[in-house]
Image 1 (cartoon, rainbow, N blue to C red):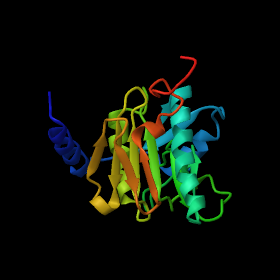
Image 2 (cartoon, rainbow, N blue to C red):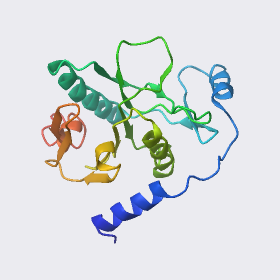
Image 3 (cartoon, helix red, strand yellow):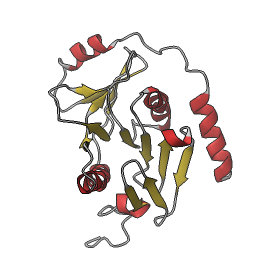
Image 4 (cartoon, one colour):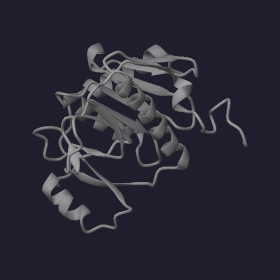
Length: 211
């Protein structure tokens, strides 16, 4: 079994390896035209030129997304920061015509626009699922790091205490938090919370009732 240090080394090698050629040729315009023909309840993402259908989020996943956005928005309001954490908003990366994802949580500055996506995001939060797998997330993490305004990418495992924090100020080196009392710090946002705070009111919450 790999040590945590070895796991971090492997993760950095994967994310810093040369980006492979596009797996598909679909561009953003073709993707949006395709999505417009699909039922509104479906969740599609464009990853490396391939349209990927994501499975619906579980209730626990939705709660985790809500918890993270609420923690962030509370700090934004307290500190009068012109930022807001949205749930389920699409993002693009400037000058990349083959990528459009829809993270579970996205921090966007300024007044809400009428656009269906943002290129000016400050944080993305991804929650693992049967379709949002390690492979897809690693591909997306490469692109999130390319976004010039982005400061953080967060990956959360909903079935165990496992939060990965990638920060621009740390040169995108992953910080892996596995204990409920481990501290998540994002000084640019004024956020300082425990890992367990993200899992409140889910099966992992030690204070849950009605289990």
